[in-house]
Image 1 (cartoon, rainbow, N blue to C red):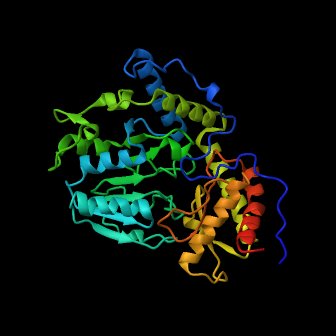
Image 2 (cartoon, rainbow, N blue to C red):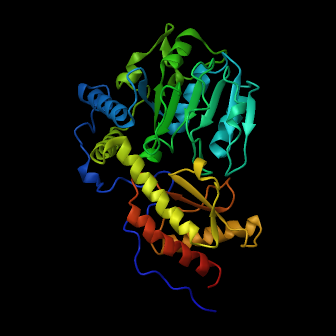
Length: 383
């Protein structure tokens, strides 16, 4: 049996995890501002750093002044749950699911909140028929399916005169895809998914219609303290001015600020989108030249440029269990060589690989990754 040739050059940064993602190029712990550490987050300094993080978020993501931005506990999951539990129940609900996180929001709506929603699904790698969406209902969806590599191509399917609210879980789409803020009433993301920040914090962006819902509607169920955004029927504005509901890690805040300042240096949102597009294009070029692998999202129009999911080609005649074992072996070989970390697909997705191509990845590292993926596949298969 012939041994497959081992590549000679490795990616300089083999961090291809889809969350937490790679740190921005040039990151180092000693570069983080430390003045706020050990201080109260409610001190003048603490609040100013939190507000600075919010202001930078608005600038980089081009969020209009009509929308409020808040830092909330519990990562992206916490932000989505906070929104669902605080605002759903006023109207009928439509949930869209084409990957595992979208399925999670379906479960919450059906089993926890017991809202009897309209559920529109599609298998991994595909997008449901968005023309089926009832525009008078509240709609919950993932902008970018982290575990399937499928994103909505744009916001054209969302009506300008919709009756319900749009809840967009955009955690793996922010900072790599342009979001139509006039179409999104509520948007969430997490620092560790978008820019390689540290975990445990989420960002909640509310449009005017979401604020109106909060101030005019009280859900039938009790709300935990960390979900409460109103007091006396009015929005708690401090949440969106650096006064967080729960104690934040100021070290994580400083880490996020570092990433945002780096994003500005890269040209802001346009520069970040260009970086992610270049990374995804480099990986696609390798996929097109490699017979054993294919994109899970076959249609380029709905294919993610961040969480790129790959499957084995039909010519690889293995059952799902054998494919899962092969993926595990490929990932282990790559990690042992320090050539690529955390590239196995999500546990609930079809067996395959998932390569993060977001803005904090260098295109040259994606190019160098291809030969290592080839080596690992052929080595795992026995040459």
